[in-house]
Length: 381
Image (cartoon, rainbow, N blue to C red; front, side, top):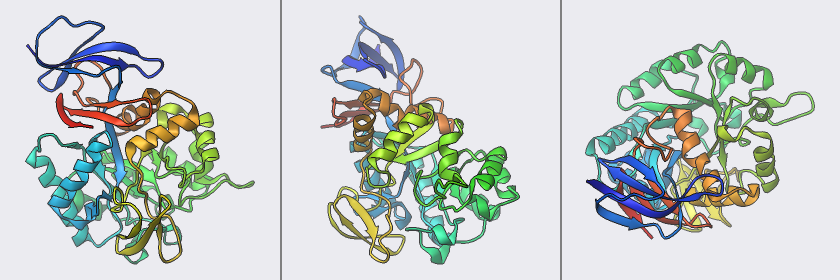
């Protein structure tokens, strides 16, 4: 007997078609137009869009909490809010802080996984953003704690809990020694907070660099004589790019350009959300720096640089779908399938038989109606 059958769901990234999905032992057992089998429970999707659960591979916090608080309860509260955004898999991101602070955050990530919490997003690893960043491109990363690339630092943290993605400035590693060592550890290397020109970026790409963190922000721009890493991200089809689709980090015109010029399968939607997400306007903090949230923007009080976002993942899908003119279910793949493939997560990100039964049910406006993790209903609007 199946554990669950979902009926009347629209599945498929183009026009979509009505399907029924059977779930057994936390995995997709069968997909068909009609399933004449028994199940312990039946969920009627009511003709809504059913996509693979979102995976947020770059966020810092929400609801007044930050991953770098180093508090297990705080991480759980963030995860609960992420679930309401349709997120079934997480990679919490760090900030540039002393090793001792990061150590506590990694211990919390380990505890979260070991707790095997029911009805909560899965944790696939940690996204180490910094402290190996360019001082001149620090943005909302605290410059006091930036440092040269150091593989020992990475290995010590990875020994506590796995690092799945690392964001660093390639110009700090011109011989690509650090890059090669990180790649050998199975970590996805991404360029961030970097002034690397096209030449430096291209060389790093040949040595194993795979992506660009929060594309178009705190990276070398396109000019008439050097298209920088921004241009490289659009030029090279095999470069994965993270997109914060809040219409603040990238203008609507830039988002249109990305969709028109970039290989769709290499676009990753992220939130880069900070602790003020879900809280509304007011004063907040990020990595010890004071932040003011106003008109949907989070900016440093000192200098006005963007300080992460207050974006929700389903809103990122909605915004990008509106701007591209594409169906919600197709754009949703930028927050599920594309993320999973970039990180080598073979069992999630797709609605296919034998994959883990992590689903997000959406309406035509990308509002989250229901979320399933391992076939269990974890959130219902």
